[in-house]
Length: 199
Image (cartoon, rainbow, N blue to C red; front, side):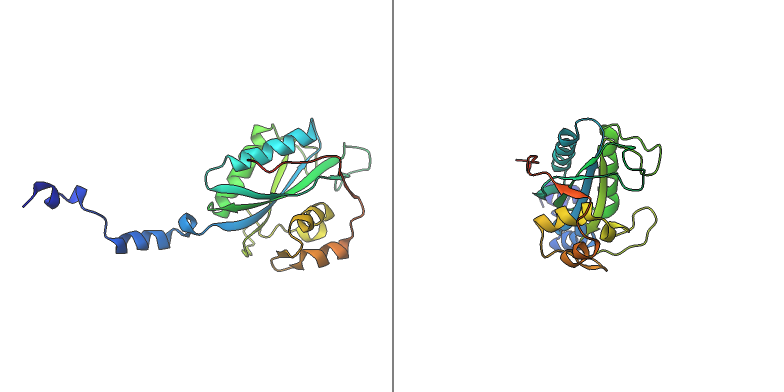
């Protein structure tokens, strides 16, 4: 008998085993759609948003599928005029990363752009929030899905509606209806600015 054939290290892995492994790891062959919200109110805001989008595209297991128009928004939860206005956008991605890894990647991008978490609702170079991940609904304090305040925020709903008019926010309903409920006051479309889809 051929020596190699009896050597277990060179045996082909039975397809049944491969299938079991693939089934156990749904992230391998079962990409999910997710929606991320980006915001910046320090430095070159447009350049920073584009840099974050490019960094997302450079992430293994992640592809940016759509990029919204840019909106300008007054800061949330602070006195008017106390901070620069935000540029906001939404990106739709397709990813094989589980939500926890996607969160880590978003935080790594924030750190790369020198995001400082000194104060709640403080100014920041970049904010990367997971708005929704497939149909997942989770109240895990480390990552609540969908984002617990997304349904109240026009700066999330307006750009998301632009790229996915039929979108649903899990557990909350149609984005179009949510946007109609909160109104688009305070968010200004910036048609003179454009973010590009990574090539």
